[in-house]
Image 1 (cartoon, rainbow, N blue to C red):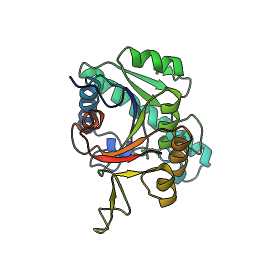
Image 2: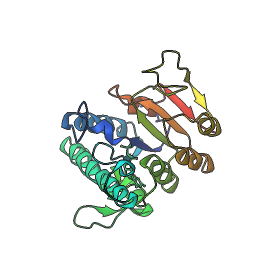
Image 3: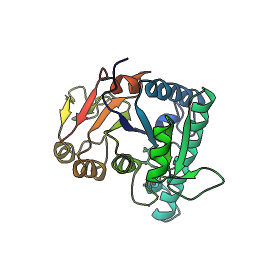
Image 4: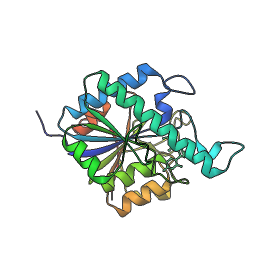
Length: 236
Ligand code: UDP
């Protein structure tokens, strides 16, 4: 079997994607499909950590009637729920998974530490990283880059609904230009909506490549890992 292009990666999955065609909550067939994709990708020999968003349940910034900090805390807790759903789906399919949270919640899952993540990854488990950074005012995109740097991952695989970074939303603007490659600085200066500027800036600082690809195609995580996938590479 060919070696994967990256030995260890962080996959960033948006919470919204887990809602499937619904606008809210967890769509089990979608979670099962992603679990199967992650298991197949791990079989290529790569170590995979997953940072899951929470937009399918809660986005703090848009919460009404509460402080930003409280809203963000709800958002971070939503990401833990998504991790637990994915962990269960992976295990139900016979895969090895481990959810780790940025918060101490011993009855629910173990705490994220660099050493815990290293250990689980080296045992071949798919590691689900919940709770974001553990701090309000950040996003799970930034979390994905932060965790990738902390656990010595070689790339962040940013799953989206389209096959890369475009100059405008290709679903709205047929003239939108798709990029095969961008530098981190070009991604920041272009203001492309695919990831927030804090995430790109941290990736630039830590020299981490980000591969933006579409999760809509089954098997796309494995395709990116084996170097046959389609996506935009954002790298210095
Ligand atoms: N969040 C936070 N700190 C973090 C990560 C996330 O406060 O380090 C909160 C924030 O309110 C965010 C929500 O959790 O809106 C869900 O995360 P995100 O919007 O990144 O999820 P996604 O869009 O990927 O589903």
